Image (cartoon, rainbow over all chains, first blue to last red; front, side, top):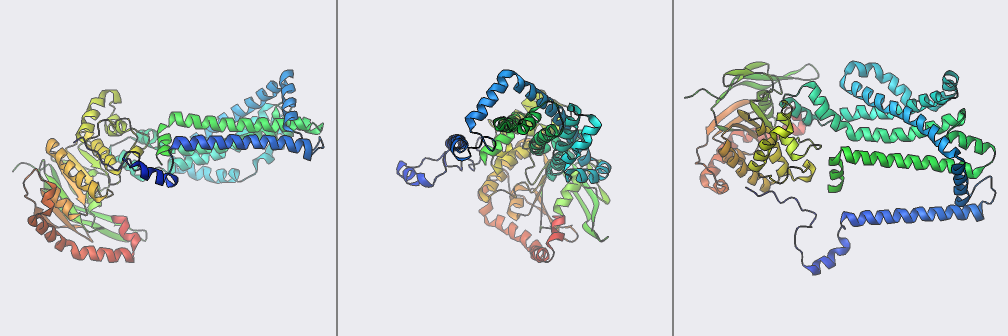
Length: 290
Length: 273
C-alpha cells in the first residue's frame, strides 16, 4: 500500500536517460529553476549597471546644461552632502511617518471594509456607490482642500495618503473573498463549520493573495500621495526637498529625491513579497511547481 | 434483518428556474441501505445523482421526504456523514496533514491532539511521508487520497462519495478503485458512491442503483454478488461484462437523450449534474 501514483516527476528528473540522449536534448530541455533564477539576476544587474553608465554619460556629454539634467555622480554627491548635514534623515523621517500612518490606516480599514462588503449584502449595497465614486476620482485633486482643513503639517498628508491608497486595498480584499472557490465553501458546510470558522479558516486565507496585490497597488499610490502632497504645501519631507530644490534649479538634489522615492518603493514591494512568503508558504510552492 | 443504516423515504427535490419554472429533479426516491453496505449509483449525466447525494449530505434541502441515519432524521450536515468531493476541494494553504484534520479542528480538537489520528489515516491511504506537503505538490490521485482521508477523519457512519475518481486518468482510477476497496475492507463503513462509469460501480459495489432521469428515479436496484476481495482482473471476466451490459441497456437511451439535451441547452443540464 506504500505505492503512490507516478504522475509526479513529470519534469523528467526522476527517470534515468542515457547520456547521449541528454546531450542531444539539452538545447530543447528546460533548465533547472536555480539556473534560470541566477541568470535572471545576472541579467538584471548588468542592465542596471548599463543604465547607470548611460545616465552618467548622458549627464556629462549629451545634456550638458546643469539645469536640465545631472550625471549620476553629481546626484550621489548631492545626496551624500544632504546626508552629512543631517537634512536627509530628517526629511526621510517626516515622509516615512506620513506614509506609515496613512498607509497603515488604509491597510487596516481597507481590509476590514473590503471583508465587511464581501460578507454583508447591506454593507456592500450602501458602500458600493461611494467606493466606485472615490476609486475613479483623481483624489490628489483634494490636496488643496485638505491643506485648508488640516493645515500644512503632516495631518493633511496622512489624509491624502490614506484616501488614495485605501481603495485598491479595499477592492482587492473584497474581490479576494468573493473569488473564494465555491467547493471550499461546500467543504465548510459539509464539516458543519460555523460562520466564523468559514470566514477565518476559508475566506481569509483564500483572499490573502488578493490582499497582497491590493497592498502592492496601494504602496505605489501612497508614495505618489506623499510626493504630491508635500510638493503642494509642507515644511519638510522628501517631496518638499524636491520642490524647493527645483525652485532653486538644484537638479542633482531633485533627481536624488526622486531616486529615494523609487528606492523606497522597490524596497517596500520586495518587503511585501518577503512577508507573503513568510505567512503564505504554499504560494511559494505553487510558483515553484508551476 | 437489522435496521437499515441509511434510510431514504419518498425523497423529492425541485429546482426553481429563473423564469419561475419548477423542475422536479428527484422523484419519490425510497431506498434502505444496510450497515457496511457499499452502494453505487449510476446514471446518465443530469439524472440527479449528485443532487441526491447532496440531499443526503444535508448540503441541499429536499422539499419532500426524509433521510434517516440510524433512525434519526437528518436535515443538515453532521459528523455521521463524511463527504468526498468530486474535485478534491483541498485547501491549498493547508498541508496534507492539516487538510486531513480539518473536520476535527473545526470541532474544537487542536492539531496537536489529533495528529496520531492523521498519521493513521495517511498510512491507510498510502500517503505516509507526505504530511507536510501542500496539495499543489501532489498528483490528482494523491489529492483524492487526502480528500478521502479527510472524510474518514471525523469517523462518519456513512461515507458519501460524489464521483471522486471522475477527474483522474484511466490507470490512476483503476488503482484508486482497488485501494478504495482495500480501505473499505478495513473500515467497513457504509458507502454511497456516485459514478457515471458502469464498470466502476459494478466493480466496487454490493448493490448498484441505476437512476433514470427527468425526474431522477431509481430504475433498477441490482445486487452484485462477486466475492470479495475483488481483483481488478474481475473486470475482464464475461460475467462482469454481462453485468455492465445489463446496466448499459437500462440507461443507454437516456445517455443518448442527455447528450442531445446537453447540445440543445447546455446551461440547463449543467445546473443539475
